[in-house]
Image (tube, rainbow, N blue to C red):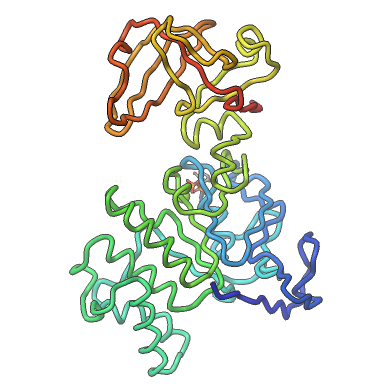
Length: 369
Ligand code: ADP
Ligand code: MG
């Protein structure tokens, strides 16, 4: 991956990170590509973004994940300069960009409704931004060619958007953003309009393209599978705040709150009362369904594992897995997800059957409410 050096020629205050690579020229130390500090945005009485602190680093594939209305797009628009923060700051490459107009920011955005010019060819669509920037013709042609290769659309120069599939159109939109070689690319649900198969294919391509070009991607989605597939790190948004920030596997394996445990994957919740009475534990806990094993009642289970007796309420076949819903003690409903490997699920586990659920002690995740 090519390393992008931040120049930081700027005036303006520094956000509160340790090294001042921009000002001090410390070799190999860079300020974050994006830093948000106490960022807030209100629309009338609606608080869309409620105090966000975040650093995104060079070359990261960063995802903002959260339900609709949680403030993701508003944060993206403040990074791009399309929206003025009510308070707080946006730093780009260590420089305070809060008051900079969007065209002065080294940031490009790809939207869901990729808004290509319908009357222009693919090549002209991609070239457009370079024309506006008065890039000389020979360089324009070369860069359009490179951008098309990057998104694997070499040979499509002369087509019009109507002659392309949804996935191809999205790749043209991506090329149009990449051709300007921004330090940061913001992507707001760019795959939302594509059907599942194509979306999964584009996810892998996006990841490969990002690795190749090495620029920082900030990717907004409400789809947890998409976020986990694509990103190095992610922020989980809820009500205009970041509920949890971390590497994809950290957030999935160690959800910090009940919201994250439910929104990123699914979880079994064991409230404080049930945790105390059934397991002698203090606090609330989440247990992932794929870590829960299920055995017909009376069959031996690992002696030191936590276990619960229950009655099967439902068995849901879902292709690669079967989901088993069990009514347990203390009003608990628990889910176990069993991989449909060769041999499948024990046939005695059907609706109404008495069963025992068990999981390793380490599968308990303490969460705050
Ligand atoms: P997300 O992208 O996570 O779905 P948004 O950032 O679009 O969320 O919206 C966050 C909240 O701010 C929502 O309640 C939304 O209705 C509100 N909002 C966003 N933009 C505007 C606007 N221009 N005017 C008024 N309310 C807005
Ligand atoms: Mg949005």
